[in-house]
Amino acid sequence: MSMISAFYGSKSILITGATGFLGKVLMEKLFRTSPDLKVIYILVRPKAGQTPQQRVLQILNSKLFEKVKEVCPNVHKKIRAIYADLDQNDLAISKEDMQELLSYTNIIFHCAATVRFDDHLRHAMQLNVSATQQLLLMANQMTKLEAFVHISTAYANCNLKYIDEVIYSCPVEPKKIMDSMEWLDDSIIEDITPKLIGDRPNTYIYTKALAEMVVQKESGNLNMAIIRPSIVGATWQEPFPGWIDNINGPTGLIIAAGKGFLRALRATPMAVADLVPVDIVVNLTLAVGWYTAVQRPKSTLIYHCTSGNINPCNWGKMGHKHLMCIVPTSYLVGVTGPWMTKLMNRLLRTLSMLEYFINRSWDWSTYNTEMLMFELSPEDQKLFNFDVRHLNWMEYIENYVLGIKMYLLKEDMAKIPEAKQHFKKLRNIHYLFNTALFLIVWRLLIARSQIARNVWFFIVSFCYKFLSYFRASSTLNA
Ligand SMILES: NC(=O)c1ccc[n+]([C@@H]2O[C@H](COP(=O)([O-])OP(=O)(O)OC[C@H]3O[C@@H](n4cnc5c(N)ncnc54)[C@H](OP(=O)(O)O)[C@@H]3O)[C@@H](O)[C@H]2O)c1
Image 1 (cartoon, rainbow, N blue to C red):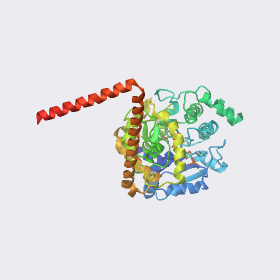
Image 2: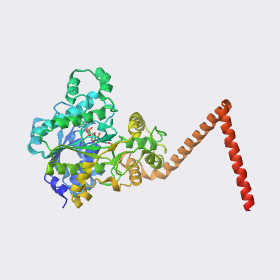
Image 3: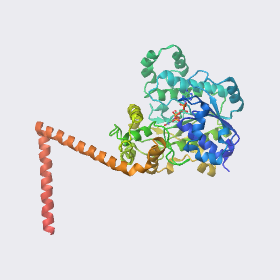
């Protein structure tokens, strides 16, 4: 019997960000492995004309939850969507709902965040820092709470080259910044943002670092843990390979390259693409929740969920073998439209922000994550596998690309051979164009520079000598 499954089997669990990429996979795994759990409370806001309940129904009716419905047919009765808006200071939770949460919650998984790199500092502060503080306040009043797991990011301290499993301080206290957001107007905040974020690349990373400081300061006697995933990608194995539903990070890169919008990117091919499949992150998160509640470590433990130091994949390998070759595209076979143009504009805007991460590598320590692996029973090591050593990157990325087509772009898989042909054609045009450009530049150089003429003469005479030698030796052999 799995200890982790049994542990969650009797719990009331609160998840923030359950409608997001990571949150959905977390919920799915919880229901699939612990179908007897009491309830999952999720904090949801209405969106795109849908009430929180309608949003939950849509999630449950998605492909991701097909397996869950088999093992937990009454899953819809076990999700309680609680109206909440993390953009509001009090999170906009009603008194009755708040009472219920405070009385029954056993475990909290805090996944909600704004993951937009270029979000206005005021908004990023509210969602990533103030909402975390508000949740900690709530957690401190929960009578049955056993563990609080906060999802951070491995890049929270990307201003450092080597990152340990500790909380690093930012120069200005989060409280001071939160207070100043109350009275500074937007344009002044924009002016001081570069000074505040310092050597971190954007407001997302900066506010995630501040959130960790808030966790450190305000967790009181809670059993607290922080998980720092690197770049979260499509599922590796569970519930099926290649599932993905948003265009953030590498997914956007793959789509833009596949659609032919992105033919070149300033990237260091040897820099490590520190990807982790979302099911790995979820498995670690559930194992951490269990360990934190059962073992009650004396201090907040931080778990790095990264792949680069264990089983590295670099951007060069990823881009060459897959982005440019496998991704056959609907764009190339003529399926375009306003939504695609909108999507591409959004992608191209964010790609420039990704360059920071594509051209650098980091080294994360993983002592706590490794320690936890050894704490699991052999059965849990299999059921909640977060060991990336066995991941075959080529196979993973191939499934990732197919997953993008199937689950995200919802494209017709029957068109793959036709699209491949088109892609080949486009690539040949690209090579032809580059060759022509090279020849023109070279011709101009020869016309203007004596050195270029000398080099050209050297190359031509070398080729001529080589050919003469080759011809002479083949005549002798005959
Ligand atoms: N994806 C990655 O590569 C990555 C890497 C490292 C760390 N992380 C961390 O992992 C966590 C989850 O990321 P993700 O990729 O799943 O992000 P995501 O798909 O953008 O999900 C964000 C979640 O936060 C919720 N949220 C945003 N604003 C809210 C508000 N005002 N009120 C209530 N809920 C709100 C969203 O709800 P709506 O559906 O209503 O918008 C959504 O459920 C984040 O903490 C992120 O920092 C992610």
